[in-house]
Image 1 (tube, helix red, strand yellow):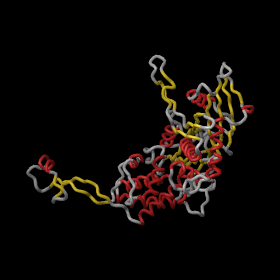
Image 2 (tube, one colour; image 1 turned 180 degrees about the vertical axis):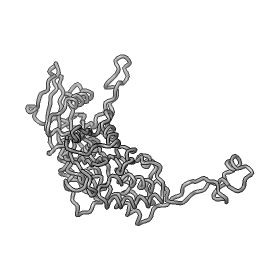
Image 3 (cartoon, one colour; image 1 turned 90 degrees about the vertical axis):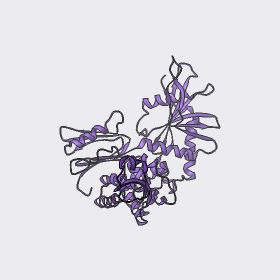
Image 4 (cartoon, one colour; image 1 turned 135 degrees about the vertical axis):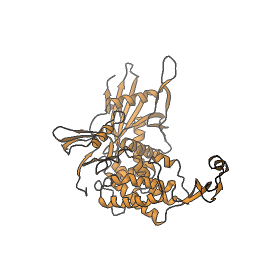
Amino acid sequence: MTDGRATIELGEYQRIRQPAPPPTDADLRLADRLADPQSPRLQLRWLANGDIDITASEWVGVLRLSTLDIHITPKYVGGSRRLLKMLDFANDTKLARQLPNTRPLDATGEHLPELLCQLLAQSTHAVLRHGLRRSYRPESDDLPVLRGRLDHRAQLLRRFGQLDRLVCHFDEHDTDNTDNQLLCAALHAARPLATSDETRTDLARLHAVFLEACSPPTRESDWYRHRIVYSRLNERYRDAHDIAYLILDHLAFDDLFQTTGPVNVNAFLIDMNAVFERFVTKLLAAAAGPHLQIDSQHRLHARITDANTGRTYATLVPDLIVRCHEPARTTPVDIKYKLYSDHKLTTSDIYQAATYAHALATADVDARAAIIYPGNRTAVTTRLLVNGHHPRSRTHLAAGSLNVEAALEHINAMNRPSTELTEQVRKLAIELATGEASSASATTAGP
């Protein structure tokens, strides 16, 4: 850190304890919201001996406290630069290619928020070099002279008999449009996330320029997504908008940036489970070929019903359903960003997969389900049998790991996986869906 603040770095699912300055009220408020039981992201505890106890989950990013910065880094992906490339593939953007070629995608270097701040500043400068887009927007105002169209009804109701001011409807041609408002909102949100003084200063200058040009009504990224449509007039904004969306999407909370202290308390966190799910889904779809069909987020209705009414009690939604044509198999797949290379599958994930398998089971073949998780190789690693009382009543569960770091090396700047990668992923999907490996090596789970 250039400002001399203390920094703690840890990986996802890691726990660390070390001395730290005492917390402020804003720090405690942020810690309470991060540990919300409805959506837990991180556990922060300040101990009586002056230590801070941090327990990370699948959320990675940066927490900027009053006197401390906490970085949760994506170890399994291979660092922040590879995570940026992973986000590109998952979201169909091309942010990583904007990085200078002299800066390789290694596991060291800047953290993702700093990279995004640098890219936002770089792309915003590119927009400014071509000039901010102007557009027409409808306005209504009381003016001393007629401009545009006179609102006869409002003039009669509000200013009857008064001719010193006219109620006019007109079109204003200026830079206060959604294209510029989105960048202004992202620049404001990015400033506290930047770790270098140079980047923070650059963002502050850019934000001041955009504040003179427009007034963003919100920082809700979906508000802008529903209103911005690209054409030849604003196509040059697309790269900058992609980065702006990424920053606004992953702000942990919108109301924690401004505090009464000298430093803003904020959090930028990415749910690696959601990113990994999108990444695997797109990778399997690209590798499917003629023998596989990949269905994402397919809702299974009427699988859990109320015995009294016969209506659906709960809907099952597997992450993926892999349909293999030869041999004919339909296998639900659950995607988990968990470190199963280091420990066994949890019983809760086994129960969930077994429920999916039972919901899609047919009379002629055994029930089957699979789990995909990140690992240091791409292969099927675990095979389980859940045996029922009847000899033919059993469920096959298979777990396979995907080497994300190696996979990212085989995806080019245009988000296209190599032939070698697609063949490897297709082989993994078929083995998970059909259980081609010998059943003699399977591990048996109790009834």
